[in-house]
Length: 213
Image (cartoon, rainbow, N blue to C red):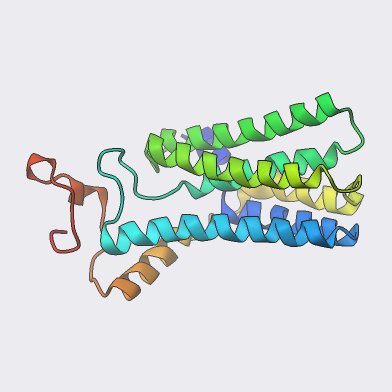
């Protein structure tokens, strides 16, 4: 349990948000302002989709009963969106094969974090797969766009900062994002109780509505 908790902590927003910010700052410091804005836009949209999917289920029971989907896995999405980009930028002076290997390793980091979410029973397989897919769209979308830009190397201090954040992530208390999302969902929906997976355990497998929580 402890090892899976350590792995899953790497995808926590407290660990990944500073790394993502460091990448954006590094791009800006390298005068790659357009790519920095593109990076911020992609991440903002993906984070918004994760939050919206969870708000929809918690507040209004909007999800997929058939696929046991209540919202994107944020941990899997963040790791898959950020790790491949970080490795790709760090390997800008390497061969194309080495950069491709870096991207693959970043994707595998997302897979491992996704597996940790399953092992801890925090998400269903569909939620992890969808979160990983969303993260892959972000990272590959950025990398494909960046390929046409000039050669760029992250500042060594930015690299050091990213590594320090990742190494200290397991010791940081996880951000209470789920509690925040529940509070916002209840406020927006006007309901007293959040929708849960238990609401789907109804007679004859009837999917829930806001009225039969």
